[in-house]
Length: 416
Ligand code: NAD
Image (cartoon, rainbow, N blue to C red):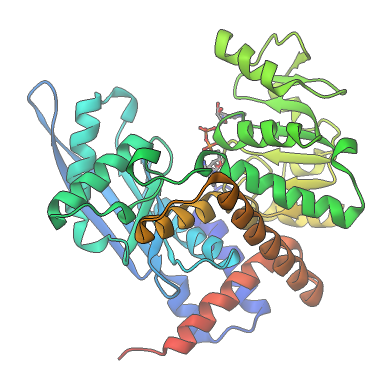
């Protein structure tokens, strides 16, 4: 199972399969199989008790063939270079699937953010930024939030970079607070993107939102927003699964009331508007759409055979393992793969960067309209590849992405 859940092996397997189907030139394959740059930094931080601790940080730039690197920074005790490398390559493919002018990158710092004080977190963020400063920038590599990093961390990163440049450079990072050059619509963007591509899938099957049941795993940024927006759009959200419990109502849950209940009690359990059920069993509830939006490695060779859904919309990154891909394809499940389904977030990050560089900010309707246009076009591109190449959707999405990135490399030629 450890091998099945290894993110680098999964990224490599999918890359190889798509490159093989595209008959990709062996030289281009070699370029894309390895990252273009990996930076390891050792970050000294003065702790509140007067001691100095040294943290290890990474920034991996997988490809900058189509534009600056783009990808989040995560703070976690178990971050590894291999994981950051895999996530950086996913960002290359994700940005290429939605055809935005970015490459792929990712960063991480090995630390326990929960035990660091706000002051320690700020000093860690500023020194990490200073250590990687020559490698980032609006035209080079644009970080964003990821696990355990947020708007505040992005504001510190932007400020540190700006102090070094002797001018305010908001476009060095996305996911900033609205008052510091953030974009309207960013908090909802990933969930909204999930809804847009799910609506596209329904159209293909002649289904209507009002007749569609949805089970969502994870009630955080992505899952919570998707639940809220989809419920407003008429979908029946029949199940919500969290880390401690799940709630089910075959007639549809009242999502706003469930959010209120969680705010008051700290959990979705014991919600009066549904039955509280076992979280592991809830994954197998019969539904039209399953939307995993919690974590990676949920749909595996062990869980996939028991799933009871027609469509899977991957809000989370890497929820499905390569062996499970085959099982889902055999079962005829229509999978909207992560690099397409959750790309609404990076798309609105791209809008944030564009607005920062223009110094001209859009209203929320414009953000949402442009997001919809990109998500719908990308969905259609993937489905077209899937039909033309007789490939399942994930393979098709990788093929679209690899085609675009390798074309850019060929056009640019090899600098020698
Ligand atoms: P989040 O922390 O806001 O939400 C995750 C939720 O999942 C939390 O409520 C958590 O309690 C719950 N959870 C954790 N373990 C669980 C388990 N075993 N079973 C059920 N629920 C569990 O995080 P998020 O930003 O919503 O990200 C969720 C996933 O989406 C991640 O894989 C992330 O990489 C991916 N993603 C997020 C964005 C974004 O814009 N936030 C963009 C692209 C991809």
